Length: 384
Ligand SMILES: Cc1ncc(COP(=O)(O)O)c(C=O)c1O
Image (cartoon, rainbow, N blue to C red; front, side, top):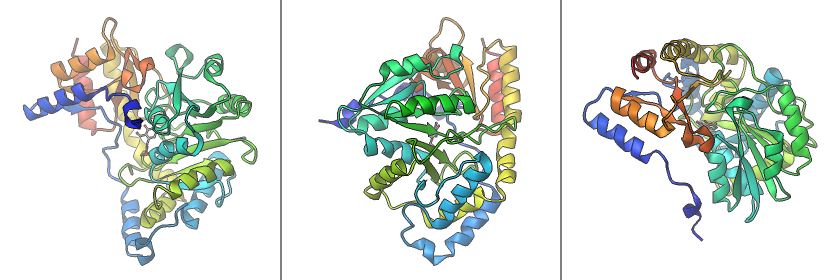
């Protein structure tokens, strides 16, 4: 059996090739495709890292589950920010970015013939990691008329005794949809009756542009009983995508199983990165977050104003640094993005890259310099 053969084909190869061609021809491309912050990591974190590099203890293999200092900082953050009490020893695990945890989670729970539930539309890693573990990812729809929230009946119709993991992602990439405490209480109640582990990918939980503060799935959970896990990331919080650090928090049995998989796969997060991450989550956190997120609000305004003038419909998401726009009638997502590249040298992401449910939409990332976002907005406004 060739597991790689199960992976879906990469949808964007033709679009990527067209972009490379235009760049080689010297075109002035505005790239609002990928969600990777353009801003540098805050100076105080770089300085903390430089200090941590001087510490010889950090040159050795790191504490695999995360240093006590890192896990303590995570526990303090969860308590302070979300009112969630976690035991730093058994309910917290350092990750090499949240993607690493998401990628390994199915190996801890899924055997051949088992299935997981994955949002259509959503981040493709949940389904791909399930396939690599030998499982069957079952999509459940997220639709615009429901605010990109799952429908309980649709979820129930794909759940059975072999459903091991249910993946959710709020705040949601790519739509920016946000949920509140009632939603999480309902979902946790439902999941408890299924025997499956409920997973929230919380990579964008701190990426808000209007000062709002979305809640954690774990608020109000009984972590001793409920099989729930939430994966967090410092990537987008502090412009640290290249540093590779995040963490999982949740039920000790679930965390323990993921830790056992990781024991065979990696040797933890570089100690100096853990030291810096612990600092970032501490008392300076609010100021750092305000500085990082501050740039996106004005970029979003500029983009929304241009899209509004040009008559585009935009989903009013409450978080993430993406704008989720509707493709004009009569075109597919891919047609629209190909035309944007060919006619106005603008790269945006076709919605169907996040699953069939994203067809008819496109995603604009605000993680490019102000001037690039403004230029992209200008081009879209003047285009027909
Ligand atoms: C929804 C979602 N989850 C997880 C990740 C992975 O983030 P990281 O591995 O940098 O923590 C991303 C990255 O873009 C994402 O969009």
